[in-house]
Image (cartoon, rainbow, N blue to C red; front, side, top):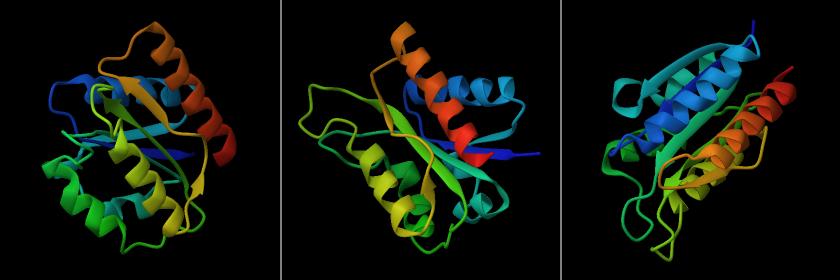
Length: 147
């Protein structure tokens, strides 16, 4: 059975909710899901999954959240060739660097050989109905790419 690993960073709960929406969408597609907060896992845990997803918020002027920086740096050292990935997250369009952390993770996954399963999904603050639909479509596209 296909295994999806979702790792998230969330300060306000918005990004955790985004991760939960993606996890539920995968489960509805009969994919085993492991979901963890970024300080509770190692980047190398992605090596045991078929699908690798990061959900992160962007802090301030385009910065990675402090709690996911070590995970991000460790991810750069992996070879995830053959893995399918997706990145999603939340941000605030008030800032010029809207959801830059999502783009940063997307670039790292490409650099370490993973295959993009779906375009990144960026959510303005908290997920609303349209965002939920986009996240469910994101999960389906990734699942299709992994099958």
